[in-house]
Image (cartoon, rainbow, N blue to C red; front, side, top):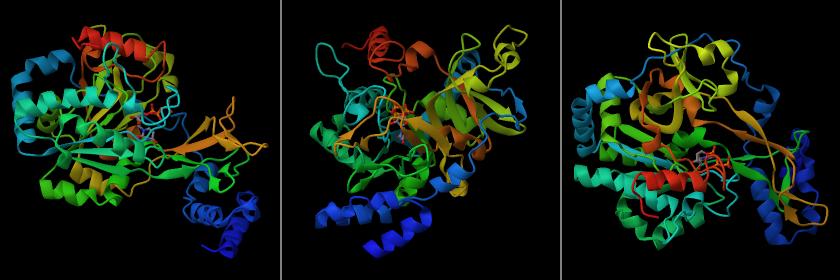
Length: 409
Ligand code: UTP
């Protein structure tokens, strides 16, 4: 893109502030800025002009049936056998969503490279791979692993895995792909400059994981390997069970397009998104959207009816993902502290929210999948999220949970 082309485009888009420092830049800086402008994904304009209605007012929300632990335990051998068979036949791959910024944890670099060890190093990636390898050793096969990164952490992530020898997993089974980036804007909708030659871009949420995987040409790899199911999981749960045969088997036997691991809520107002139905379609309702009546509704056994809290571990049927890949999912607008060029010419993260980011969410794929099986897991065994440094869902709480599961730290 030439300077003239950039100027014409930005005039039309009312974003000329991006060229403020053009004349001050050297040739490399000018090229960087023009490339950055050429690569802007302008779909945020539509998201700003037509924000999605998050109130849930137009939805016909109802509870959804799923498998509680007792249902699973009653059919455990059947589910496990079906899952092991699928894994052995190479039908299951894993997708690690590791493109996030981990701002709440406040670390530089990939969250998975965070060391949660006490007496010896134990990286988040490493602990998750130990969990996966329990399954691959039991089944006697490897499960292909695809790792989503972003422009912000790709180099650091790939070199970390290489440096740590893929945590004992075969290198040929691990492939990386980058997610897309979206511009960040100020409260007037103007794209923020991160540096004089760089528009502020950030990862566009975890909802685009499949389209990014496809764009990276990895669907061919999946088909070549005979993969039919993708188990996606978040980097921040160190008790994450990946390619869990019982979960895989239960999902396949149930004939649904998607399985969702869930913790059952212990109290009505717990802050998790819960699985439900919107008419005949599966859906998720956020905790702040539940009415008091829905939050407190109980069945004849006294269990909460809207109980299945999702933990970002899903099994998706590949053929259905391919059918829906071009379907639009909502773009969420979130206010964040965005690193920006300050008046003194330095780049800093502000103390207060200074703008908006645009994110799609993996949970929003549940509805287009058409059917979902809520699958209860034992919270203490499978859910140790690390979102914050201290307090709730923190390094401290995750360490306690790991110890409770016999992991030596
Ligand atoms: P979170 O929603 O916790 O976001 O991600 P985050 O970026 O890691 O952390 P904060 O909000 O900045 O503190 C849940 C999962 O989705 C992945 C994360 O890496 C994590 O595994 N994710 C999130 C992506 O892969 N891409 C994104 O754009 C956002």
